[in-house]
Image (cartoon, rainbow over all chains, first blue to last red; front, top):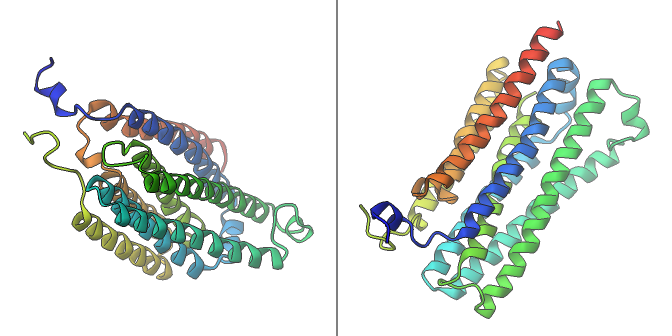
Length: 203
Length: 98
């Protein structure tokens, strides 16, 4: 057998390497969109400034706190799983799901408010605005929409795995699936941590 | 060296601390943005966002306790690649347009 270096991490699941690779591709995907945002912002600073004032900072701050707390609860769920505390794991997963759903509901209200003001991609009102404003709201809906899609996928995965935990198919001995779902959920949190200042705070 | 399996990464105590700091930094970044610091707002917002995501990656995602070199390097390499994309694009944007 190998030396101490090999012994150091004997139980690292292969699946985790694959998950991290996937996470890195997601970082590049959103990184490209961030670059697009900043390049357009450089060309249309005044339009971007005016457009960003239309966003509701309260909703953004609320949703940031909701997602951060959901990250905490999924981390606590995985820790409880490692301690073989199944009811606790299920409870924290349920909290995570509730918080993720809360995020989407708040996001829905926010988008609804924009729609009511005639602000949605290709709307007659938005098309009559300046080029920079059209770009800003195009990027806003594209990036927060793609992120919301990730939240939706995360909720689907986590609720499926909640059932597997209940059935005992995910356990302290076989935690990889839930650990990877946790990594994905944290990634969704990290992406929002950057979307929040980009759209809501920098005006 | 830690004996294998004896020390589990993370734990509720650490997670709660990190969560508290993350919420504090969220409040801080909102306050900083409402002070109208001009260009400094961009630096403050992105700086705080970077610290927050580092906390999530290191503690919630356990990278701080990761022992395997491959997993340690994967994200830094990705971020370096992204930095090259952004750097090269900006070297064009800043020079080509006035």
